[in-house]
Amino acid sequence: MRRSAHAAPDERSPRLGGGGEFSLIRRFLEANPLPLDVRVGPGDDAVVFVDGLVVSTDVSVEDVHFRSAWLSEPETGYRAVTAALSDLAAMAATPVGVLVSLAFPERTDVEAVMSGVKDACREAGTHLVGGDLSRSPGPLVLDAVVLGRTGRPALRSMALPGDELWVTGPVGASAGAVRVLEAGADPGPELRRAYARPRARIAEAARLAHASVLGACIDVSDGLSGDAGHIAAASGVRIVLDAAAIPIHPALAAHFGAEESLELALHGGEDYELLFSARPGAPVAGALQAHEAASLARVGHAEVGEGVWLRAPDGRERRLLRGGYSHVEDVAP
Image 1 (cartoon, rainbow, N blue to C red):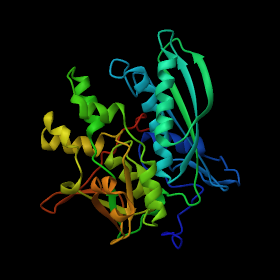
Image 2: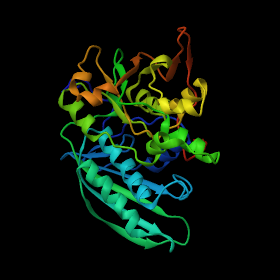
Image 3: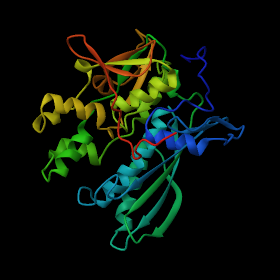
């Protein structure tokens, strides 16, 4: 395995990135010792137990994560579960089951929502194994708990100076769809598909891990800049993203100029592609099937230092102080 000689700062307590959301998480975790059977604790994409069990949870709230006017009920269920399964992909874990808790208003077609849930499970090669149902006087809420297995988890703390940074596919489309929908316009089929029917990169992560080329890994849920920042913080490195190499989804050009498209790719999120590190010259493309390798892009590198920086085509660099999406404003320590 590629990083057998690399000691993470602390697998059981990974270093968290900046921002209000993680400041609040730190408060929750203070003076909260982890059980001895936890190998990787809070701060990565999932919790990993010493026996290889991987567990993550993801909540999807109507009018926060989605709007019912933008998605059908099957798409709502599909999208919520796929977001959770993407956390398993980021850990190079194989899914073994999904539990879904659903709190639904009276108007909800529960059967339709759950058809989307089961569709997401089938696509990831796993099964719905349990959950809970409850009435809700307010918004529709789905909470997905995903279970997986891995012998060697990919961690955010596994990037080293000199590593290359790769992304498995184009970014920015989901955020672009949201921006167009917010304006009351039609995003078109490609942008809408990226938002409504994302895919967890389970197979790609497994192939990269099997080929021993996978270093640090995270799914692009909060935006390329924000998720690169999580790797930088956890690994203690400086990440430089090459603006000219970022694979901006081509469908964005129908609605946005080059500058705004780049901003969406950097800060939008919910693309669920994998952002990962690999040693220079590692056979990354060779580890994947042809159609998967065709979407790969080498977007930057890691070096000594800290933070995330963007390199313009003229070679000038600027630090990206804005990260990805956060549900919590900055709070005092």
